[in-house]
Image (cartoon, rainbow, N blue to C red; front, side):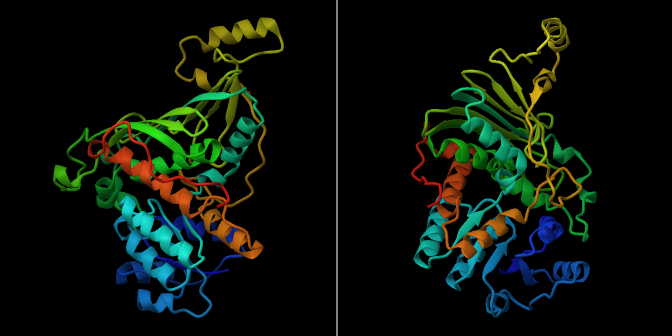
Length: 383
């Protein structure tokens, strides 16, 4: 499948570093409205850069546009690409309003085009292994999930010095203006919706805890840096998802079932370990005396969640970035290529992306919505 990249900033490098995992994807060109970014990206990766976005859309044979622009541009870029007859894979969120997300889904369906949005983390080995364990009822019937997406006080780290391999600066102003929830909630929302179906009701709280992020932006220009969303899924499972830039870094997931608990330590790592424990949170040993020793070791330990029987999972053979984001970013676009080649619907396509976007938008801007909130979007896997 012939693809093109629009937006050659920080995250674009992650797609380039993982593109080699998917020979079915052929990058034919790229574009960035910033001439400096365009020259840097093209020179570093040896990519042919177009002179304009319109020129990119007119490229002969182009099939899929990767929209890696800043979130405020997602809607306009994706809309133009769909109108030009191209499939679209967008970075998160799909759009900055639910109405704009609706419009993109309408355009995609009208043109019989595929539309999907990052993140690709739920396509990784860890997420797939966890999903299989849930489906196989390794812990009985799931009742509750705790999902943490805390990134620590990024604004007190030397982010001004952070650059991608090609030299693109970390987009601090955009990150803090868009907000931790719209940037990060999609990771676990995509997992949970893939496992348990659409969210049918939610109650959320959001707040800006820190008014100074070191960028010189006034407080009103900064998004909420904390959200807590309590979600009820179609099958009855409930979950609490927290996103923020204040608490210590924690991207763990705990799935509580009638017969046990499954805990995953890191959402951003395709090879993240997954541990199984009994309903009381203990690690069951075949040797009774060893079990007593384990109880003593676990007692009062902050890391006691990581005692347990480790689930076997496939080895991650894909090349992934040597950063905290150990994911195959190009796996998402590759899923579109695979579905297109097979003539089959995308498993988690336009409706799925719109639903994730709606839930994240409500969580990020909880004060704008009456609670409890019942999402008006839904999805069917494979549709």
